[in-house]
Length: 165
Image (tube, rainbow, N blue to C red; front, side):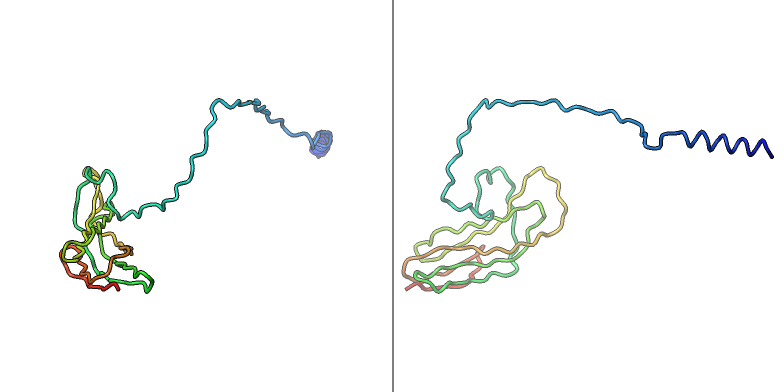
């Protein structure tokens, strides 16, 4: 019994002498200071006054893409009561895959004041894509037109007409 008591007492004595605040040191790393000197001065380019082109307008490079159909679910002819009157098309529908991009081409009126709008889609020819429809919903500002009556077609389907005063 005395031996156990002596063993416990010596254990407590030795642990009481240990420095509790001492912690293992971690190696410190020094970050070298690097000074950079300017080597080239770049002037800021002036900001263009143009607004960015809507993504549904035909883009440069579309000739390298595969052309496909775009399916219109609804097409509405809208007009803003302004002077001059502003005409818009609101089109919602579906593209063949998520990889296809919508394109809408609005030409000037023909000799009979028909505006034949082309709506289609384009995609990279070699891209493998999921075969699911992708919804779209766009409003196309068609601009201002001279005085007269106009008939609007989208992909050979008559949509509506409007008159400008």
